[in-house]
Image (tube, rainbow, N blue to C red; front, side):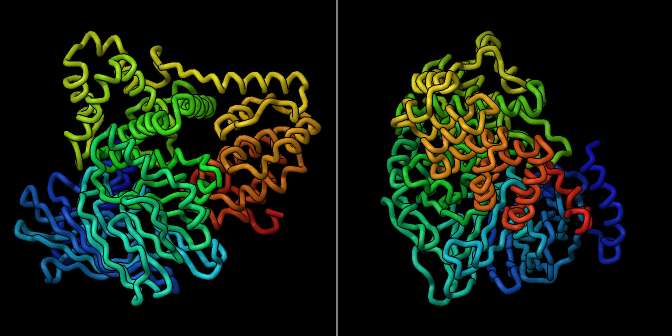
Length: 628
């Protein structure tokens, strides 16, 4: 029995007598994929929200009304909540019998509502609390403009329940509408139809006609402006960044055309991007109709737009066909990474795509160094058990999943594989998918039930076993060979200014910096810094530069290192730097000092990734005198 399920049973034993005092409300007896919802009994099909965003109280409050599909004449429906204040519940306009269970780690509290087979609509009046892990409130100094507050949500993986009571599992999809009240000087946007101008009253209406899973619910409110890019594309950001963001992402319409040529019609009407403040923990989040993105992507030279390509690809893999459980995460991210690389090839050339693939393999190798090549999380189908999904490494889901699909492409040829892939999306649009169902579909529609071919291609090794199978594709890059020649020249003593780096992209700089010998002397680092001014390059290049600085304890670069950690909230960029600092006592001391200042501005997801690296719980337990 898992630890989570055992804790649930304990909580529910305590919960049962309280239910009996009002009337019998059967509590949820099974927890599936971090959710109390019993979708085989009752599933939500549509949600209507009427919300007030209060920056003074830092709360989102109002009502959430749910249309029900009672599949089994059930007498109770279960919702997930996390640190929500539930005020009252009604059914079809009449007072309902309901109960909140005890809180369980990761899961929060089940909200169980007594219904009848004839019940059609449950309405919950509620408010968020300070413990809403899916909501980040930013004070004006934490924004670009410095004059107005900002709030945004991050619902993936199971954080929607912290700002909306819901059936918080990717296994269920529903449509939604929303009415959101905000201060008149601010703009509200959601993962739905969106305004392009501010409302004088500060009231906004939204509609999402296509069914989505709860992790794609999204809301942002702030001093936000809009700029059109193409007929179906545009960018939102704070006014001071909107012009630069529109220029950076000017290829978005071309991206959409290339994606549709490969994967079929785009079924979400619009593809807009919201550039958030720096605390956003990811490169991008594929909220349908409105991708959320880190401002780091606005580098000034379009060098990081592959992240936008990735989020666009999610419009098919993830948003259109969704992993049914978080164990099946590779069905979202492996497919999306593969599609991203294919689109990179169309948009920027085969060589660019191969460099991106090799950099992805570098991340797999780093994971193997940290966790071991045989770690179970390097299988495509995860076995999460009672672990927190967000503390599990998912690099394999992205990169091994991508290479698995590339292996199939190379084995069958694009003339066979591409129609299969498009047919897969067409056949399962707006549905959820398990690994088991995908394998069955693949055996029938790609392998034509040829079991010998299936075995020959080691498909089960790819999906169910750790490590990289023997038939892993081997990408090659001519440009990386040229970079490797410059690494060798520098190692032999060639001054940095004589290295042949003209025309290098972010990809080449990453390859160069990731493979320099460590530690370098201070003189050699000063030579590199003088020649190339890495502190002026984009944050992805700096992510590869700073480990060299840390390995050599090159103090002249530490002010720039500190600024990097204080100004960027994307976990992918800063966690490796903190990890490198934590390798030595003096580095750990520096990291903890900077982190103490930076942590309040990081999103909870970023904190969750860095706290264990710095053993932050030990620091938090110290007295003020002990910290000095």
